Picture 1 (cartoon, rainbow, N blue to C red):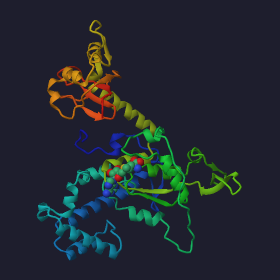
Picture 2: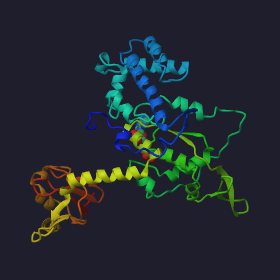
Picture 3: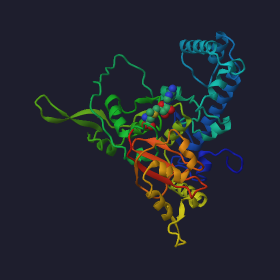
Picture 4: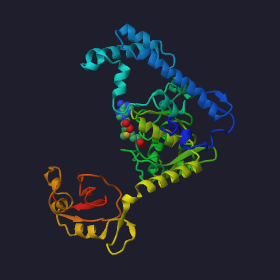
Length: 411
Ligand SMILES: C[S@@+](CC[C@H](N)C(=O)[O-])C[C@H]1O[C@@H](n2cnc3c(N)ncnc32)[C@H](O)[C@@H]1O
């Protein structure tokens, strides 16, 4: 919460500075024109507020029967749930789930409430959801504008128009060192350049690409960069003045030739994930940012963290010198270097921890007694990874620090 007890918004985070797209004159969005981007946001926030209100009014009471479920789902005006058949099917599945579950909470809790209890569901109030959202592009809850987006940008399937693509069958290998890739880490994150190859192969500019498990939104980044000549050429393709993209192929005579296979132009991405944190990261990856305001704010936060936590990284390197420095103290470095086994380190750090069955044992050698980057308080924590174990000093023993030790024992 901000000091004023108002939820933080994208605006309060960046104070008065706004991304360049805002306040820059008329904008069009989903076929509507607004005097500026702020008006666009206001308009869609109003719709989202009405939608959240409707959910509460119509769904936050337990369903009692199939008919009741069906009628209430069908009456939702702000949350398009599909065709008549699709709503009927959904109502059937909800009724079945409600009767099949043995969850005792169902007697007193509605389905919406149960879903909201699941790990990962946004726990904020409507006000927080609205404050974080930038509709229709991003909502910190299920997005009711996707149907409008598809209606506006999607092309209805036309059987008379031939569409044929050979399955994409080339090896794809991309490094994980691109600055865009590294801007935010995520588990099993896919480099956007790898995704671009698939999008270019299967789609045309302006097509809608859907990633239902988007994580940090690299599919969205890839879809947008399909319109960036330099980014496309960095994949080893050629782009001519008309935006035709060529790739190298081997012809029937074994000769290498450049063949056209795609067109330059951004594709439109719909990104979805179960995790609210993931969609928030994906949104920020895919939305214009005022770089200067971002840098200023990042520096301010870094300074605040340094002022508050910097002491944890400072040690007296040599007992003789009273100069504070970042890193491990000489005294502790010597003690640790003298250890020949994990047990010796364990004993040095915390005798009690020897009872832990998960602690590795056996011969080891120490390495990287460098500036600490992670720490924890209390008991030393041991994590066992291939060829590496880590621990940190308990707060009562010394200043916290990270110890990397190469593990040379079995298993
Ligand atoms: C492997 S990650 C995707 C990473 C992504 N390709 C990237 O580059 O950042 C898989 C994602 O699927 C999401 N996920 C898992 N089950 C899901 C579900 N039932 N519906 C939507 N998302 C789900 C997880 O939250 C996770 O973010």
